[in-house]
Image 1 (tube, rainbow, N blue to C red):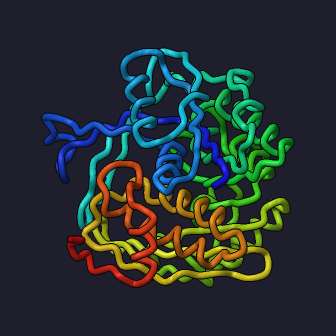
Image 2: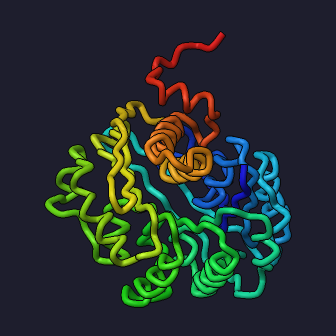
Length: 348
């Protein structure tokens, strides 16, 4: 299968055991993850050749992050080294009516100090078919935004398919005002062939919102039809985009979500079945697992958007059962769920 490159930050994730609150914790579980690294792990797990590009500090913790990627089969030879620290985030896992919480400690991380010219993008994109970035990377710093813009321009020149997950993170966009953020994201997204984003992403970045839906008031009754207007507005704003996709998460509680997705190709809107995800193990990385599944699906089924979308939703549904940032479900497990087998019976 054709090669993929992702670009972004990998962090050290520290979480209290189980559903303990931060104030109850006497120890933290350690996981390495981040939006774009999670996508890379998913793809490697499906047998797709993939490189993860980032900047890591040359110390033991940076080496551990690199080894986590290597252990999962992700190419790491395009990683650049420098800076003093790895970004950290603390996760408190919610349950029932108590939502999860994230506290970031990523100021002055190695990738936040990245600059254009530090990555040899022409070498990174040699024999590559697909490049993926997310809205998290340009939110880190102006330098990271500039490096991301350098990447999409070179990828475009080299004929590489470009995708993004818009991933709005209010806690990260601290170095600029809203007008500058919209300018940054608009320019970057204009280079994209495939755009993933939910209703909040579209509204916060571009002022685009679904007609007749307040997701905060109707969070458990998310209708696919409400997002057709979002998809059409996105394609009008970004004429290069060939596909606009959104996940449909209905939040009944922190432990029970509904999950589906839609894809619009400019002519037709594809919709998946809706999954009931109860007793969620870990919802962090759910969107990343969807994107990993989508890229795999679009590469494997280039003429079958419905099948690609179905694979993405089933893959991300399984991610909610897996502890940690990354999706470790296999292709056969995803295809089994796509086929309707959600029994969870022991495989003997």
